[in-house]
Length: 155
Image 1 (cartoon, rainbow, N blue to C red):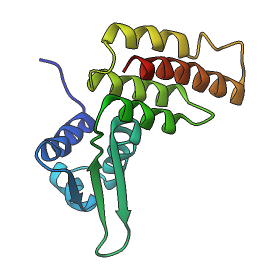
Image 2: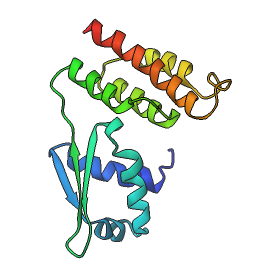
Image 3: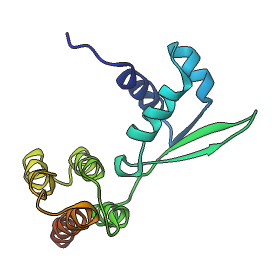
Image 4: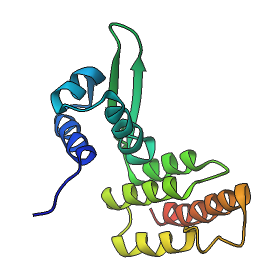
């Protein structure tokens, strides 16, 4: 049996609630207490596992009555989903964000795992290593947008 780390467990716990609801509101300290971890662990999970690239929006209110609201973004059809991903990319794209977008496209059955692997192989850091800094992220963004535009025309 494989061991899951605390981040995976917290992510699964929150996603379990989102299976039946469009959004959840949590208090970071309550979740941290439930899992006997530091509140920054909850921040890490939310900031890395509940991003727009993964199909979520996060709102927060700070202070004594503060909360974190996690909303599932449900898009109507494939074109809407692809358009949303194109909007997220912008002019630059980190490798991590690119991976998140591809994983979301696979999870939503817009591309196969094989197609995702092929796209990832083209946008990975080692392939773009001859380009430095911002230019690397710009090239990655353009490559992924090109794939997505082609996919959009398929639908």
